[in-house]
Image (cartoon, rainbow, N blue to C red; front, side, top):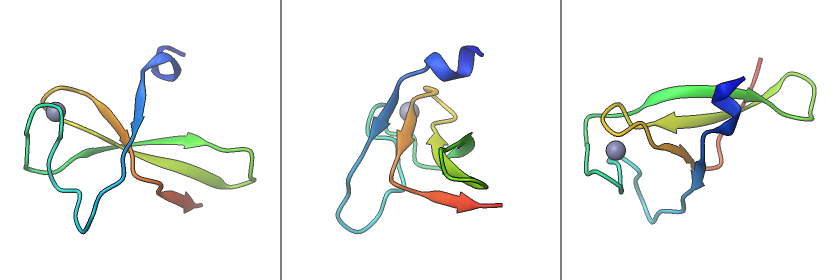
Amino acid sequence: MMENKREIEKVDFETEFSYCPACGYKNGFHNMYRKTEEDGVLSWFLICPQCSKIYDIGLTVKR
Ligand SMILES: [Zn+2]
């Protein structure tokens, strides 16, 4: 799947991650999920709607 080849940037932040560090877009992010090795647990990534950069701020979600 093409999606797996897109680069995902890990980010660390002080108190808030609310805008895209790459392009400055500040109206929130789209979401992307990916299966992990752990059963039922997904990685939860944030996608900038403007420049399409993908960020990993360490979120996971269980379904
Ligand atoms: Zn952006």
